Image 1: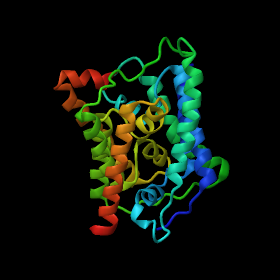
Image 2: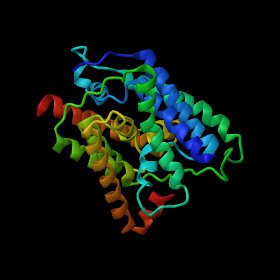
Image 3: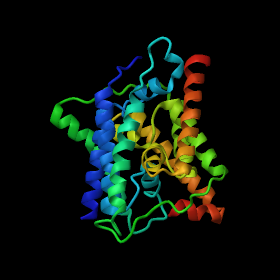
Image 4: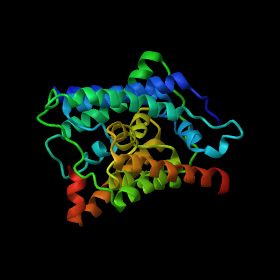
Amino acid sequence: MIIVIQFVVGLVFGFGLLLSGMSNPEKVLNFLDLAAIPSGGWDPSLLLVMAGAVGVTFAGFQLVRRRQRPVLGERFHLPPSQTLDWRIAAGPAIFGIGWGLAGICPGPAFVALGYGSPAILLFVIAMMVGMAAARRVADRQPSLASALTE
Amino acid sequence: MTTEYTAIAALAGGALIGAAAVMMMGLTGRIAGVSGIAARLLPPWDGALAGRIAFIAGLIVATLVVRLTTGRLPPLTLDIGPIALIVAGLLVGFGAVWGNGCTSGHGVCGIASLSPRSMVATLVFMATAVATTFLVRHVM
């Protein structure tokens, strides 16, 4: 049952990315390109995607929080560490450089795989290698490993 | 290449992404963070692997469903060479795992949970992404 649910969640998530246009790297880059504002080439769509997504998630999480446990699970799996340390900045900084370079982040990368483009496949393989590398490095530092494997 | 500012589709698409995140938390108790789910497709595996595979499969199948039902797909323009694409993929993958989340986990679920850590993460990756796009498009 939970596998069917996860599939449907992925499906809805994917529809959202496709409808919002975020599966198109050019549209993402046209948002990130703030220097294009004066010329009228800036595409603010991503801001509204974030607004819609955060708005619905915020409202929905308020309802979910009233429950003791999820409908189909034993407990809520929330990120364990809430401390602000250097990794909180370093990881996202590295992620942002890659995102700004290609205009692809993990969700749209998988959605775009369905287009059958070899370039996207290349990106996804590189992304998975990057993920494996980060987990390997973290495994050598036990304090980090526990944070990454929850 | 310019893209059209699609306000309604962006809001509606965002709302669907939010709905997916709420379903994930309410039903399975997990964060709908794509990088976290994708990274755990790699070993070492735990008991929740099948669900993660199903979620990622859903993302891919969404495109196939849209293609089958509407007969077309939204445009996908990728104006970047293979070397830069590989570098970008490596950085996105490494950075997302190192920072414990990406645009979905921090940018959507984290901000909606009012997590200070996710707000910092989102501001930082937005800033470096804007700077990188500026360098690539206007300096290099």
